[in-house]
Amino acid sequence: MANIGNKTVLHVTFVHHQLKSMTIKLTDGLTCQEVLKQCLLYVGPKIIADKDNVEVYGPKYLHLFGLQLLDNHQEQIWLPQSHTFDSQDQGKTYQFRIRFYPHDPMKVNYKTSVNDVMLEYLFLQILDDFLMRKLGASTKFNEKKIFKLLSLSFLMPSSLPFDGSIKVDRNYKKEKKINFFNIKNKISKFISKRLITQWWIDSFWICQGLKESIQKRKGDNENLGYHKQEFCSEIMSTEPYYWIERYTATYNNGENKTEVTVSVKICEMNHSPFLYFGDVLKYSLAEIIDIKIYCYNLNVSKKIVMICPRNEAPTHLEFSMEGSSESFVSMLQGFVMLFICYDVCINLDLQTTDMKLRNELQSFGPLELSNAKSVLRGVQPDREIKFLIHESLTEYSHYAVLVQQGEMFETLDLNITKEKIVNLSSKGTLLKSFDNCQQLIHQLRIDYQSQVLPRNNPGVAEINKLFQDDLIEPYYYYSSSPPPVSNEPGVYLREDLSRRTLIADINPLIKKYSVLLKDQEMMLVELQAEKRKIAEAFRGAIQNIFELNRFKPENFIKFYGTVWEKRLCVLMELAPNGDLLTYICQHPQKVAQKVDIIYQIVNILSILV
Image 1 (cartoon, rainbow, N blue to C red):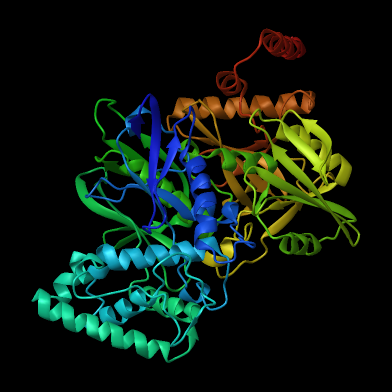
Image 2: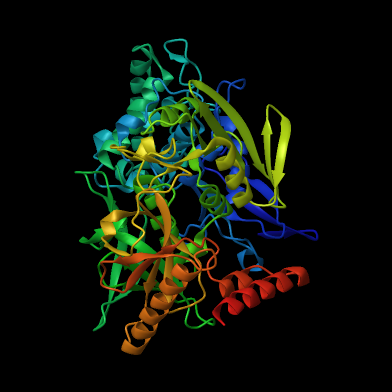
């Protein structure tokens, strides 16, 4: 941020010189995600050739983008999308960049893809990384490859957009002008050191060679998209993971501390992301169930990241650089969303407003209408009336309710206002407003019976197709009829549960998760303490709840059974708002609400007398 007059503003730069930096006025509560949305709306019309058909698809690609801190030369520091700007950000400069690249070059197609803001910006970013950043210093590129990439770079037009449909032939006059006077200004010092030893002589012959190569390419009579594809394929086949972030941290294994470089690498066998300490594989990101960030001393920048994998002891990493812990955790969250499961949040502190809404609505991510219809058609067993909710592909904070009745489909629009009012409309006509998402879901299930929900595996958003290969059975349905779960408490395996989402609770001795068992939502309660007295008290409380539920099931939540785990875990009836104490702490109460809560407590106590 910087001060201009009496106003505090935020500056964001871009990867091409013709995309002028944006000045965004700082307002209370301005988040990184809101800035990213503004940036996508800004760059779309400037980098897309067909101005009348700009398929920006901002919501679809939003999670691929990020803001990177530029004035830090030691590590890549990215802002979490949930980051709220404040006075501590003053004087910092950020660049709008794509943070996560599609790992398969075959899915990056410039020959046929048009009007795709992500692909166009990705090309500009890779081009800038090669010409002006450290990518050109990679030893994997020999001099022959560097020269080939330079000729493709200078074949690109001198101004935006880079229209892939343009024919590159003898009449093509839009390429960048090069001569030995300015060649050094158009390439990085890394490339210059490898190609130029004697400036006058080497620069002259390099320019001559580039001009001859460009003329030869013009003779091929290919479209510009063909040459863009050739450039990206060469980069991504030689340095496919140059964009992967690496962080320096101190690893505490309980006995000693060791400095390690932590990063994520993609397994070539199954295209799944794994956490690495240096060259040592730690575990798959699919095994991570929770991450916490701790700060033991507010006066220092050091923070501890505790990673909790499934069936293993927690891993503790200490980050000393300011912002690196949040950057690291947000990187892991991005990989989980794109490669593993779109609707899983592994750190509640970094949860964005959109992620919270998606969880409350039990919504799919951004989907094409045709794909949303395919989801409803494919649900088994088939139901006469069913519906699903999915995010809009083109509008932020907008959702669609797709209803199927027999062979007929109807689309309703959902809009959530800044005041958290949920408006349901049809073809521009407001049908009804709701105070919260729970009221909406309740009404929709009354009107349309069964809701199809995203399951805890791939395929719940269009963006998953770029990162995941096998999208198997990605859906299940909610029905108003009782699910096939026994009325008597049972013992269940972890494999029986899916869609594990953390529920906020201020009690440090337990963790709560929203899970699914045989298509029924439940609450998994996991005891964190290992002391015998605490465990005995926990078992006693569960036994009391079980007996009270049998006595008054309408007043006490149900106990479904235990889960076979190292820690003591039980399955209870879902309480999505958590316990009463957590709810009161997180939601300020008016006098009337306090009286109502007290009345309910007294009513329950009277039952126990």
